[in-house]
Amino acid sequence: MSVAVAPAAKPEAETPADLAGHLSRQAATLDLFGRLKAARKAVAGRLTFTTSFGIEDQAIGHAILSQDLDIDLVTLDTGRLFPETHDVWAATEARYGRRIRAIVPERAALETLIVAQGSDGFRASIAARQACCHVRKVEPLKIALDGAAGWITGLRADQSEHRADVAFAAHDPARDLIKINPLHDWSRADAVAFTATHGVPVNALHDRGFLSIGCAPCTRAIQPGEPERAGRWWWEQDGKTECGLHANPLHLAARAALTANSKAQAS
Ligand code: SF4
Image (spheres, rainbow, N blue to C red):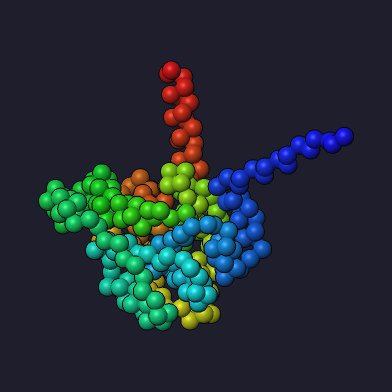
């Protein structure tokens, strides 16, 4: 008499959150080169690295380009970058022999913004500044990440309070991708030492007190003892030094849960 054999249970597919946890545990034992290789191997689909050519991004760029990893390199060319940023952009392409894809603001949206607020109208209010960042950065980022399975950034947890809980990898529910921060546990000194050891081109402004570098009219040098990101949008007094590109996935998840909860209570 034959005995019926129950079909083997189908293994459950790994969720994005599981994958992020797995990658984060693996990264703890790897150097920067190994971390990027592991991320490339683990995430199926396009991986996009957005670089602003700051020292952290230059370290990551070196690890990607020197290993010839299949990772999309993109920069958001806001139209207001420092000449020194363009210099390091050109030096990077020359050093590694690879073009870095630039995403520029959408023309009609930019013209509408400038008509509405003038050339430097972003200083008038936080809303005006956010409108400028939206057209020049947030919308171009959406284009850069469209269809990407993973997004690599140069965030470090010790850069600011807002970034303190940055992990190696996390599921970004708003963009539905894995966000990978290979320098999450590095200090600035680590990035400086890495770029010096490997002879990586760096932005000349770093030596002039510009630790975090964004658009020219919205970035100033900082004084010794000031927080690293104090030179960004320094005229705003609320202490928030982010432009909307790096909404915290944990905060987004919490917000989504709150919205779902209030909808459930209302129904
Ligand atoms: S950083 Fe300044 S110039 Fe650049 S997009 Fe934001 S507000 Fe506009």
